[in-house]
Length: 91
Image (cartoon, rainbow, N blue to C red; front, side, top):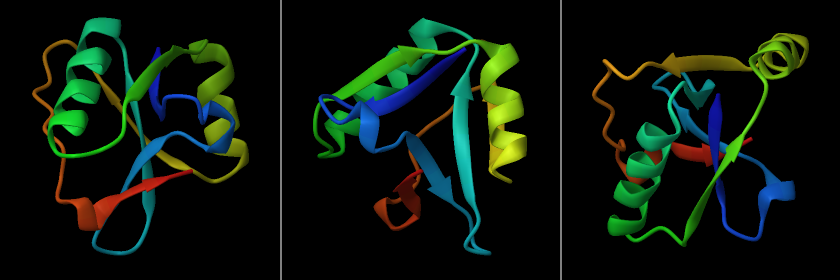
């Protein structure tokens, strides 16, 4: 599983999207290539250089549930494009 962070600020949080109800949703990618492509799309939208980090599924899912973080797992079959900047956050 792969998460996206701001390069050099990995300790400050990971990429998430805030929905219309104000809930932050952590984006988790099954495939590294998909996470890299998404990070590149963010950079093209004017975000700083992004970094893709690998995490163990057996660790990230329980961590999200423990902290009450909502999350979305994207498979290689999913087409994901960055939302408007108004909905992007880091948790």
